[in-house]
Each structure stands twice: as C-alpha cells, then as structure tokens.
Image: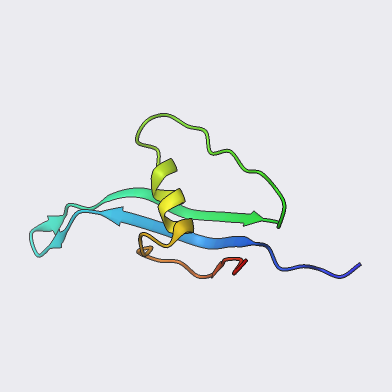
Length: 78
C-alpha cells in the first residue's frame, strides 16, 4: 500500500498575536507547536472553548494568515 501525502499537514505550527518590544514581549500565543495531519477525504472538527485558536487554525489552513513558525504545510490543489 502506497503512503499518500496528507491533504493538510502542519508540524510545530505556532501563532502569536501582539508585539514584541525592547520593554517586553506582549505577544499572546494562540497556537503552540501544533501538529496536524488530515488525509484526503477525511472530515475534521475543531472543538474547544472560546479563544483557544480554532479560527486561527482554520485561517492557517485557508492561507489567510501566516504562522509565526510553521515547519510544513501541504494543501490539496483540487
């Protein structure tokens, strides 16, 4: 059986909002080293409390935001 590349894959995705200044780091970490592999044809549901990063993860998948740190990302071109 051939190993297929996932439709969506994140490795160590980190996302911070805010600013880092010489006086301090005011950034809030919303995603911290998140790993996600979604095979083609699978349905995924993100569950969690308000403010936990669900919308941020969807925005990363859709390409609406760039991760503060993202080692890999694969998206289907179909």
